[in-house]
Image (cartoon, rainbow, N blue to C red; front, side, top):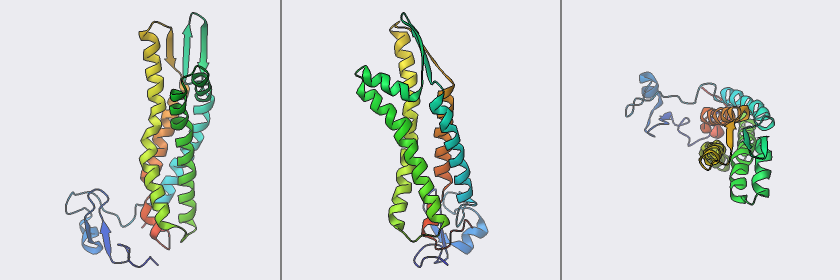
Length: 208
């Protein structure tokens, strides 16, 4: 059973690339959008399962991303490894609160928000929840939008490395933690892209 008024309930299918709405029978017979030739699906195939798989992968990768050092700096005073959290503390204590805030938002707040939000969306879809459908759709749009901003942490590491070497203040080298963090960004972005927000509006959560 589907919610009255949805495209699926009215026998229509919308192209997720250009937005063209076509009769489902004709569109699925062609298999592609008549306007942009994108592949059409009433619902993304195995959307919830693929989103869950990418989400779990991202959460597992997030552990070494925080435990392993992301950067090694060395200079006259010696060398030290920095993790994401220790880097935030170091920048804050040095008075660079703006950089510390950027790293915290990009490496802690954004991933945590994506984990919790996608988990909530998957849980409510699985339970066929009628709760706050419009708000959950907006939540998905926010998650999809902020996904790219996690890369700010990687950019900060790159800029810090270049700045230290340019000013001859020392040397800085990326460490394995930054690789794991990049993997977290990629997997959570794929999790968001795999999720089909149209499932929110289905009484029965099918990926058809």
